[in-house]
Length: 137
Image (cartoon, rainbow, N blue to C red; front, side):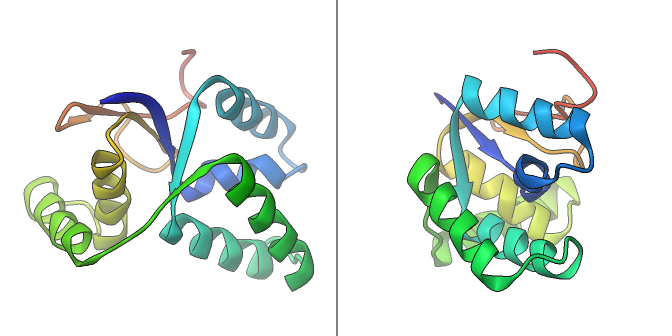
């Protein structure tokens, strides 16, 4: 594992969500503290939520994606990763898309996966899931 941390879509959303000041500040704090890694799936989910739920203009979302790609490591996806996600889903019973996030974090050799939605504290193949809004790091 490396000192990188994988960031689930919800954490990335909070980087730009100024309505929840506490979660916005916490997301910024952990992004600054770790070597952040995301996947193309995170960028897709971020785009969808930004447009549908936050009401962002497509140009704003495009600019934010540029910012994320310049400041975070974006991991590519492939068929091997999908098969890894299926293995994670079978063993740990997460949804396929959560399993894909977990598989991406493992493949990126991250020792932490920050997510608000998954089981806080669970360790999968040496990678720990942490809800950064429930605990201090």
